[in-house]
Amino acid sequence: MNAAHHPPRHPPDPDGRARTIRFPPFWHAYVARQTEPRLAILDALVDAHLERRVLRRYLRRLKHATLFAFVTAAAAAHWFSDQIAWLVERMPALRAFWTLITGGSR
Image (tube, rainbow, N blue to C red; front, side, top):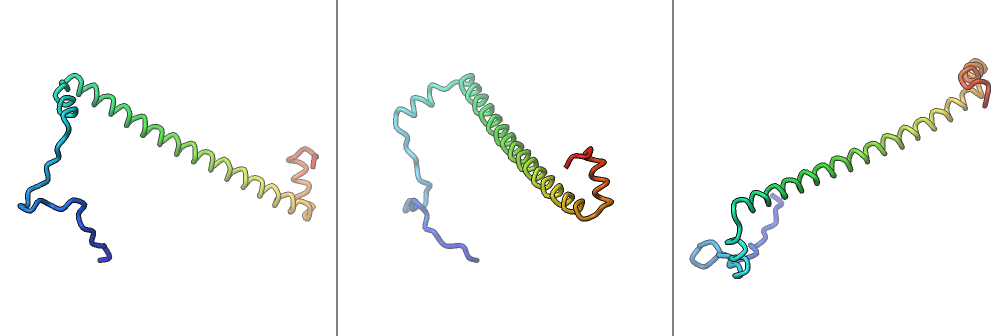
């Protein structure tokens, strides 16, 4: 509906065939040197890198969630302690209960 029409980056060939990408001889030699064991090692290295990246992302999110929960809990505890102290000052029954909980210190 609202999609803008963008022309393709590379126009197709006049005869309608797909474009051929030509690599320099250096890359041809590099690909020719690859063997099954080397490709297997490369696959293992890529898989290990991806696993580490996923683990780092998970641990970073866990760290942020833990920090958020800790700060939120500390702010809530501070706010509730202020509210309880305000109520204790105005209600004698709560003042006695607060004194019992805190051991007589204010």
